[in-house]
Image 1 (cartoon, rainbow, N blue to C red):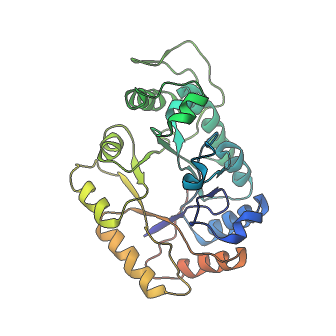
Image 2 (tube, helix red, strand yellow):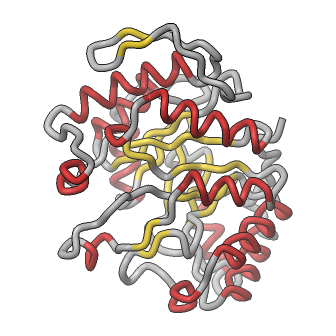
Length: 291
């Protein structure tokens, strides 16, 4: 099984992060990314939120590093591991803004970007950015079609119900002719959207049983990626047999790449955990996405 990591430090959700992450910075993150790169992990992640309401922060957390800046830095500190946004909120961006920003990152990294995107659910953040909330699902579907028409083109053109453009140069553009687009979410609608308009699904906050029931309701296209998350953090050094059992169960549910959350009590402990997981029989080294 290929394994990507939900990168520590960059997002701190209450009760889900280690105490050491509070004081960690970009150098610690770079060491994690470089170690994962050398061991053959498939990708690292970075999420997006512009601003979290004060009363929501105790539930969602308040720390969300900017993915473009962060993954751009990590691109320079790695060579083959892929760089996944987990996830960008489509309604916060014009499709050509995403094509330009992540096309540039794709070029910088040699074709290693996985564009994870979602519809979004935090109404206050939509209002902060002065973007529509009520029709965000339909708007996201149109943005996905626009992105697919635009990501690998110097002069993209698209006409849909929300987005229309032509006669514009977007340079640089993505070097991957078909940049992977994965949809985040936790609903059956997000899975159907992914199967229809994208290349993969990377859900969150669901048990494996819930995920499997949902996946069984949708016919998935050939080559579709299911980047499923473990609902409890993996402890490969402390409980390797349990980790192999969990990953085996995820494989049986249709997982193609594990979106792994891993126990870490310190930076050194986290790096040891990466090495321990990479040494298990269920781990398949990835070739990454470098051109």
